[in-house]
Length: 493
View 1: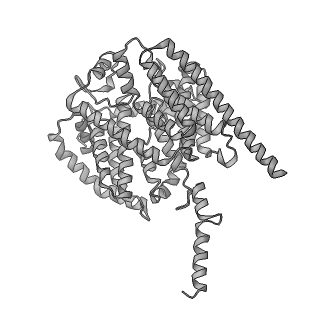
View 2: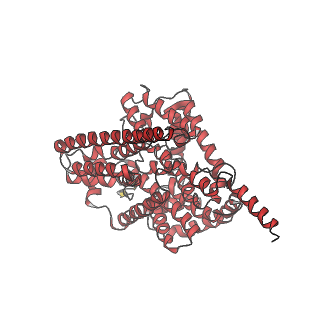
């Protein structure tokens, strides 16, 4: 009787969840259909594609995540093409929102309507703390205003939801790796083509009307734009590609991974974005430490031995380089940068000023200040700590330091786990840029990577994952080994 009633309750719960999911899908269909009929232009295709991805993600969440990543990373290229084809259309305004809509839909479908509870829906305390700070930063009326703060926090939180999707294995790790490999390689190839052949008509059209000073490496010299919403996000995607490809090359020994490593490194160097060019180079060196018994020691030795050689090589190569972006990176590596023309001091001043300004408040002045959504927004204050200081004040800095410390404590174990290492390298390649509101595609990838890294316990080789516990049984790996040794000794072998 009890078994029958329990099965009935489970069936009713499943039916209720499916009914609610069906209601959400139906409402979404109605809303998007009305919008499609009223706005027209390229926006129709984007909305219909988003709708299709959401419907398919009910059955396979990987589809929704891949779609959100493709649209997020390709946000800039989509907007530039749409603006070139239909300057008066609204497609350019809705593209940044679409990845966030899909990620929120995945969260609602699998964590709210899916009725996950207890250990199946929990999250690490550092993640919860930083999420609370972002929420508070969104409801503050100070800074750029309540509306801008709410919009910026909503976009950032949507990207951070990718953490839960990988932490609880709602989406597969293989899907994340594959979308980075393919999309990252295409983005890098597009940047290289722009470097060699110049901007396409739609890119040139956008630069003429909406270009900003940071796009230029010199008089009339525009950085490769790539697919991203900014040249910086495209460079970030290249660094992510290099990190993942280096880790996969180290683990699989498959030479095919040399292709994305080469594409990503070439593109990030020619972009001249040192924020990501230097971590990409570091990822190549740290790749030697993956799977080692003492990964940090191996990594430090590799960097210590190679760094002087890099400095000498950069100085020798600099006179022969024709790319302004690569020359900018090599000039810094060789130590030949002119203090009068260098922009390093400007970036340092921005970080320090933003940090001190944020620390003057306990709860900060809202997330709109680090978003380009607001006319008074900075777009970014260059680094996570200063961004969080502006957003959440002292509380924001504490939250960011907490998640940094928790991450660092998992680094040795993540290095030794060859399946987690690619995700560790994503976080390393984007260090200091985890909380950038304007990275519509890279931010979800970073937090998806952190979700995988945080499944690794702080003690070496101990992985907190349901599939591994099922594989080894409730007693764990060490007990299995002890039983095997005991059986062998008893049999006299």
